Length: 347
Image 1: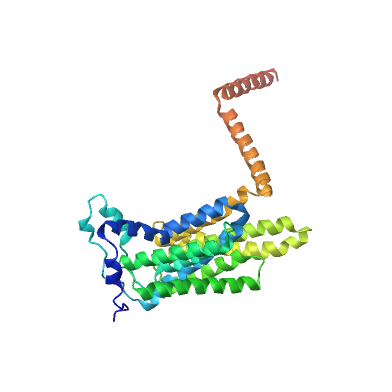
Image 2: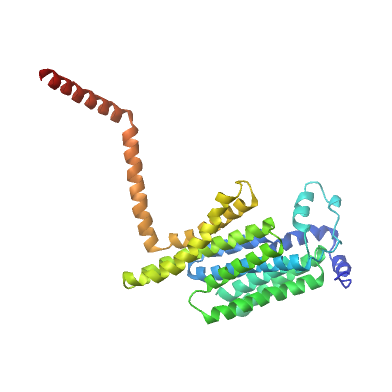
């Protein structure tokens, strides 16, 4: 039974053929690659709000695991009412349109609706540019635009995007409720939710490759954030004895997450979805930790010391490998060998 109520045809009639490519491009505002780029840019370059951006990123990862798991449970197909036949477009534009306007897999709920709701409303909540009213109005406009494009392209029914927005808002509210119970570290809560819903997606999809990738990214983000918090708590301790708890808790969580990622290289073939998930997770951990280390005074000191000794080591190796050094070493060895032989003869 169809979930539609005849809404797609009137919406598609509003979009002329020449505007189809623009609609396909606008829908990328809710695509995974674009949202990952937006969050990474804010995380790397907005140092004062990096913790808040990390919290939103964790909620986004949790949302992906959640809606993809729900898709597997419901298994509802997408509508088969494309906005435009790609064959009608010029040959050069056809690949672009097919890559941006077409979709496969299950249709309920809309992943674009979930993603845009979490990311844009989350950013509206944590950022400070302009006023809160304008930020939330802009977020609502973007979410509405993306939802409209999904309907116009004929890849979702109206109920798909409405439920998608509701799922995104529900996850944001649930994360906020959990954070209010423990205000000290919101990002750990959302990254923990991401791991939980990543496991949910793995189970519901019966170990689909995408589920492995999302779980790997969630584990990597969780591990990287635990290392960041471990460094902060170690710097803040007043005496060494108080460092045991953060080492045990933060270090333990990070070690478990990283060990599960590294284990994929030990127990699975190198060119498999499992090792790809492990690689994605380790890469995510690096992406999460590097910006914080780059702006940390303590990390800079340690990094400066390490780089100094690495440079000294490389200079030493370079000195040992130069021809003049080898010639001097050979001449010295020959000289001492001759003296040793003369001393033996005199005996």
